[in-house]
Image 1 (cartoon, one colour):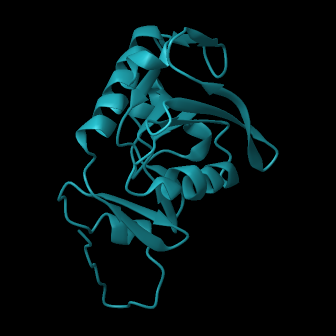
Image 2 (cartoon, helix red, strand yellow):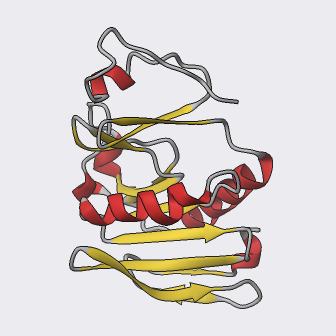
Length: 184
């Protein structure tokens, strides 16, 4: 279902101020270079993967780190991104403002939406790299994989593809072990 949103000046780019004037209607509103992106609420398979991954993270994260859903990443007035999960320090959870800065995000995680995979695989990948988020994981239920990306200069390098069925461990950006089968 498409939703049309208008403003008094349709020629100006969308800003974060415009975003916070939007209705609280269950849709996810993001801004990419002044363009508004509206996403419907997540379907249950997507929500299930986000919730399961959040539980795994919370069980293993150091006490000063948190995995949070629905947190906006706010690099400037014309960009506002909402990853499925972000890992932040406890200090950032109590900060004010419309979101956190990109430097405050230790890890951004997206679970690919089957209705619009390009948002997570292309659009957000480029945007997160451009604003300097060092670690980005893309969980894709379509091929039962998680792509582990690390910032290398101004683009991401895929350092690993994780599959279900065996434990995967990392130390970057923090110590973690998981079987991706527990996420699907």
